[in-house]
Amino acid sequence: MQSQIPRDFNTSFPDLSPFPTEIPTAPLLRLSLGKLLAGDKSELDRLFEASVEIGFFYLDFQDSQLGSSLLQDVDKLFGVGKELFELSLEEKNKYDFSKQNSYFGYKAQGVAVVDKEGNLDRNEFYNVSKDDILGISEQLPAPSLLNQNRKPIESFMRNSHAIVTLILTILNDKLGLPPSTLPDMHRQSALSGDQVRWVKAPPQPMNDRRVALGQHTDFGSVTVLLNRLGGLQVQMPGTDDWVYVRPLPGHAIINLGDAMVKFSNGLLRSNIHRVSAPPGAQAECTRYSLVYFARPEDKVILRRLEGKLIPPLEGNEVEEEVSSKEWIIRRALGPRVNLGRKVDLNKSAGTEELSRRIKV
Ligand SMILES: O=C(O)CCC(=O)C(=O)O
Ligand SMILES: [Fe+2]
Image (cartoon, rainbow, N blue to C red; front, side):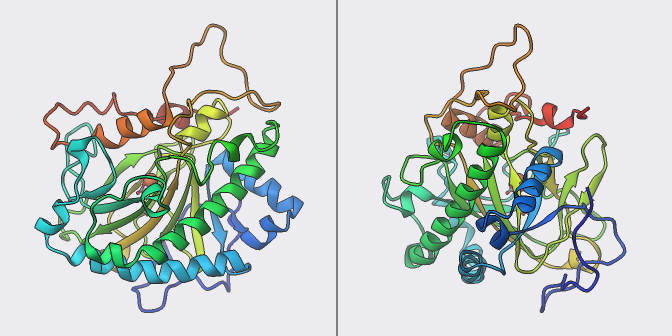
């Protein structure tokens, strides 16, 4: 797989310390949303190639109305995120709903285990439910800042969901599934764990820089990730090597989650990734990300689907009967240390083992 970033391409964000030029980066394909929307055949092929090989790609939002509209939402919401995390810890902790078995709301820094040694995370985040914002479920208590910004959050959710539906439609057809199988498991109007997340990771001490967000595969179907400083790293398929993903202006980083691995019985990849301290001079900066996580509807059972290209189960293999909702709660709350039970990372594992395999 070859990186598609032309030499003269604008790869830096104004007003931010630049991403170093000399470090190795993940060679992700750079796809155009405009071409995907137009059904450009070679672009559809490249999307499938990236989804099978690494499960991560860049998506250029600058050449379509949908993408430009989403970039406007993102600018607005990056501002909202900064303000949100400036609220006092006491105020933010009022919206930690993990004790009610919900992963929506606030997660303080240092409440999740990131590795087998028991190290704790170094980032805080806030999750807002799609169903809350679109009026599909009860409205959760939220800081007034978020209540005042429901409109831009809704716009970002609707635009992101439209992009996810496009990606699911393309993958659906490539996998040889009956028309609209995947989109029909991700209806915008149905109850699901879809959420927007803001993430903040403060600069770490120079002599003690560690992983801020532990290695994981995403739990759902498709993730739309907007970040501006480096720090995201992917584990290159078939190796133990971690490489930085260079953030690109005007682009999202799209990655597939566990549900897509289960639906395709391992054909599509949900690659292992983590967030480390940003590289070079960027390590001195506070890092923010904004993410839309799309998951299958709550009731969908995560198991192999019947499609022309989807490999069969092994001889006597029996799949676990787990719903999308159960899977996400298990994965999201399993590593939390504040819930009065012992953390066992094996019990909250995802599709990492499949991700580590080398395809032949
Ligand atoms: O902040 C990032 O760049 C990645 C965040 C991430 O992987 C996640 O929240 O699942
Ligand atoms: Fe992730």
